[in-house]
Length: 199
Ligand SMILES: [Zn+2]
Image (cartoon, rainbow, N blue to C red; front, side):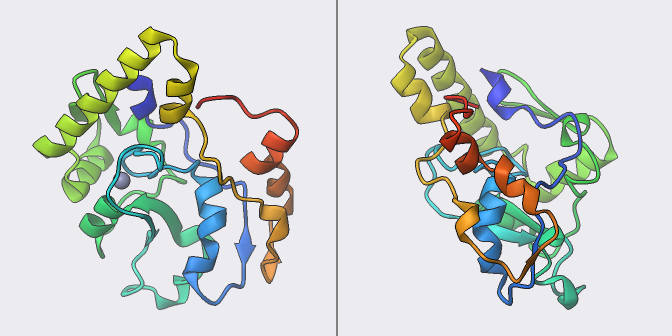
C-alpha cells in the first residue's frame, strides 16, 4: 500500500483558475479540490491522523514577490508541517515538474531523491527525518492491514474522499479563467455518481 505515497508521474495541471480574491485564504476551497485534499509536498491526506489544519503555501514567497500573494497559480495546498519547514525557501513547482520523477518512497517509508530537484525537496522539507520515515511506514502498514481485511468502511476511512467536498459552483470568485474545471471538481463528480470510493 505504498501507492498512497506515490508522487504524480506528470506535472500537476491546474483544473481551476479563480482570480481576484483579496485574501489568499479565499482560495482554500479551490486548492483543496485542486490538490485532492492532501499535501502536495508530502502526500499526507486530510483524513489521515494529523494534529493540525492544512495551510496555503506561496510557492514563490511573498517576501520575494508580494504581487503574487493572492495569485492562484502561486498557491499550494500543504500540511502545516511542510509549510513550517518550507518558510521562504524555494522548491520546485509541482505544476512544472513531476514530483514522481524526483522522489520515490519505498514500502518501509524511506524516501529516495532521484535527482537534484528531489534532493532540494528532501532537504528543504526534511522528508528523510526519522519521524517522517516512521510515520510513513506506520501508515503504509496500516493501509496494508486494512486492505487485507477487505473492510470497505475502513478502506474508505483511510483512502476515501472527505465528506465535505467543496461545491465550487456555489462560489463566485471575481473571475475564473478555467470555469470548466468546476464540472471536474470532486463534488460535481460525486453528484454525477462518478466518484470512486477511494483514491
Ligand atoms: Zn506535507
